[in-house]
Image: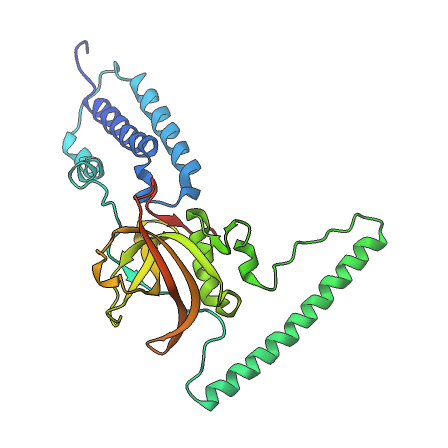
Length: 289
């Protein structure tokens, strides 16, 4: 019937366009980085395209008259839009602070566990040798057919060499892009980093059990999305610790040493120099695995 508006169609178009506009705004403004890891950006841009296609397809049917059902059913779809407008992104982190723990080489508390770990290490070494032998055989077999030998780049034995590319006056500069990987390597291969000097941009984090001349210098690391966002830092020793404000930005330069915190051996930053710094464009750092 002439004049009978398709209210269902209009509601759907409005919701689709609102979702598209909201997502597009977050992507263009860069605020999306407070929600999800950059690895998901291609999928999010594809989502924008899909939403637009759906909206256009419905727009082409807007003149088709029909019996309209209750529009209240569409209220649920408006919830994320309303929440995004009422509760904008929280910048500066979520307050979850921690220090990492090495995933290898942990000390044991009794001889039984020590013996068990030793046994596991022996098994692991044997398996490694077998796997290595298999790998060598595979390479020889490939070569016997005249194929080009494929040499896979080996990880450096000294893990600190991965980050020694950019240095000034004996100090290795850690970029925001390197921080997450560097931080985890510190805990897993602390001996490789001890005695070496590093500089990085950090925030001042609170941590229970620290002394008056200690503070936590770190960054918020995201592995997947805002749900797993955690501020990870290094216990740092400085006479200036008492005058530092929580979450303020610093350029920290210091030497890595070993320290025991709550029964764990952790990296410790000594001989520190700190300078005030401005917040980077992207306050979080992202771990790629």
